[in-house]
Image 1 (cartoon, rainbow, N blue to C red):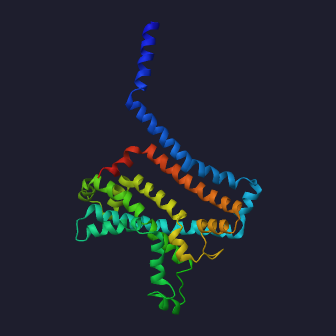
Image 2: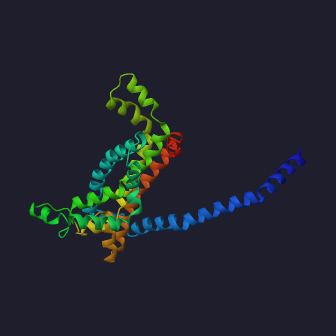
Image 3: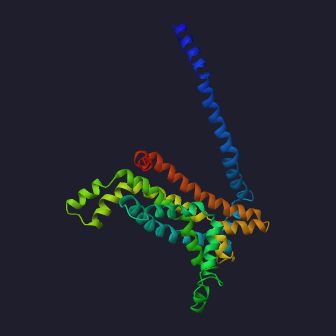
Length: 291
């Protein structure tokens, strides 16, 4: 009996020494080392620096008027940009997945445009359109409307940068599902609106939620486009990322890390929800990749 166990143990040791196992172990170790050095360690450093002066100082940094304004503005912009991108993203995905029309490939390319254009360029586009010397600037100024260096400009820039996330999550999933169930619902007498809410939306609800989480995370963390159109006016047009930069440039490290830690915590919550979706509804979410 003992000889058999010894033989089995030696066999397992030899199996681990095979090139395939060694390669897998090396790749896993390399991946963990990379993640630890470039992701986990910097993230831990942010939270450590934020808490270095104690919890009262941490709360004081977050309750400071400019910080409170930045937090409120970040949440406000996300609360506007994300719902708009949900509606437009669902509409764009529906058009691409369900219809064949002239210009369909162009529409798909336009959906992907914010992925390929630098956020700074996106911000400059809005300055060119709505700035004081822009194409529509004189008209807007004559009617008392301010977009650039104001909240509307931040919202527009955020919508542009975050637009693809919802549509790009839905298009492959909708195409993989086909339209058989929707056609059956229409055949049974359902109106298009009822068919949409009772058949189409339930079929893609987890992919939709997945896209919304990604869209929200990017909306709260956007820096480049918002930096161009906001003017970085403290207490008025500074979001959390911009406020962190301002504090850091003023050598106010503890306050900068405090706000950064809150922004990182919001991102981690989004990541946690995303991971929960991937684990709990893996089969439904995997369907969107069958394209």
